[in-house]
Image (cartoon, rainbow over all chains, first blue to last red; front, side):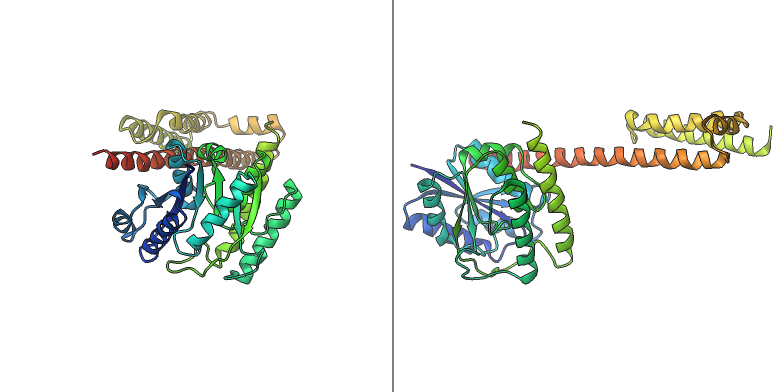
Length: 238
Length: 113
C-alpha cells in the first residue's frame, strides 16, 4: 500500500495544530489511506511541542528555529529515511483543508506526476489571499515561465505533494527561506513532472503569516535572486 | 626617533600582545588570527620605517601617501568582511544540518525507549 507522509511545519500554532492533525487523520480513515502525519515544530515559543505530543502524529522538534524551508526539509528527510512513497506538505495554520489530500494523490497517481501543487487560482474559489500577495504570485508566474517555460498559477502555495524521487532531491537540498517559488525552478530543472490541481483554501485559523507587509519587498527581491541563482547553479552544472 | 613613532610602535605591540592573549585563551581561532597578526606586523614595519609609506606610494604612483593608506585599508576591510560573510554562511548551513539531525534523532529515541 502506498505510504503517505503528511508534513506539517508548525511555528507557534498551538491553537490550530490539533484540528489540523485530527482533520488529516479523519480523512485518512475515511478514504482508507496509509497516511502518517509528521508535525515539524520549528522551535515554537508557545506550547506547540506539548500539544503535538498529545495528538496522533510523529513529532519532530527542532532545537533551534530554522524557518519554513529548514523545517519542511526536516520532514522530507524523515519521510525519505522511513521509506514513504509520497510526501504532502500542509500548512499548520489550517489554511489547507484536509479534504483536498485525496484529490492531490489521485492527480499524482493518474498523471504520474512527481510534484502536485494545490492552486487556489484555477477554480478561483475560497480564500484568494491579499492583493499584494496576488501581485507577487503573478510576478513569480511570469518569472518561472521566462526561465523554465512552465506555468504554475500558484507558485507560493504551501500545499504540495512530492514523490519519493523528489524526496531524495529535497533531502539533500531545499531552500531555507521562502522555499515555495524557488523549489518550483528546482523541480522543473531537475526534470520532474509538475501538475497543478484546483483547491479551495481557507483563511488562517490562528497564528500570524510568516510574511508581514513590510517584508514583502524583501521577499520578492530575495526570492528573485534565489531563483536566478538556482537557475544558474543547476543549468551550468550539467 | 619621533614621538609618534614610539607611540605607534607601543600601540602595535600592545595590539599584538592582545591577539596572542586571545589565541592562548582560546577566544580566537588561529586561522582568523593570521590576518590580525599580519596587520600588526605591517603597522610595526611602517612605524620603524617612516619614509616607507612615501616610498610605497611613489612605487604604485599615488601622489598623496595617506590616500594609499585609506585605499589599502578599505580594500582589506571589504575583503575581510566578505570572508566573514562566507564563514557565517557556512556556519548557518552547518547549524541547520545539526538541528535537523537532532530533531530526527530525538524522535527516534522517543520511538524506542
